[in-house]
Length: 112
Length: 117
Image 1 (tube, rainbow over the protein chains, first blue to last red):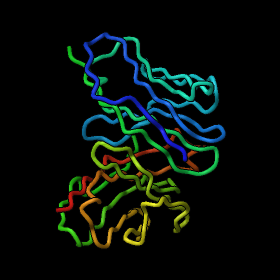
Image 2: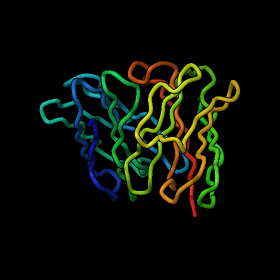
Image 3: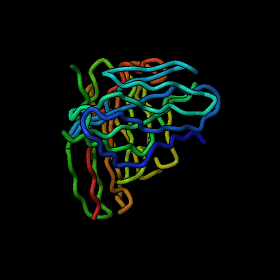
């Protein structure tokens, strides 16, 4: 079945460090891929998305490229800030159907 | 900024009791969802709801679960007889249209943490 596997956390980085959170997926056809972020006490917020192979999603300095050949959608940011501390979820939606498949979430803590 | 709200933020109940988790989706949204996340595990889809009926549900969503839109604003998840393994964070979400088509308007609530003792 469809699924998403993402990097185990927690991840702790110093401010201005480079961030990579790995995400790979299993799905038939051409799913759409997403990264969601959850700040403490808040709901899941869409961070970025990509709907077809080789698309790059970007937002707030974060980027992820839809790689069909490696079934991956790794999240990157060149220089993290303390305010980026949150839990990050990778997810997919199939071409048909209406439900999201999420990963387990990766907790990121950025220290000054 | 429109938002999905959920109440309560934390619910503690005894095994075998019924619980109702409440959600207020965005007012002009048409599709509603429940997800759950058991501690340390993936966020799992439970059910989607459209036009006053269930449009899709997962294997988790058995006869112990039900959903309802009792009025024009609330969307509820009922668990009839809670089990220890129902302890989880439950997220409500809503979209204006189909999730695959309207991802820019996919909104999630902050979640209700259910603890079954």
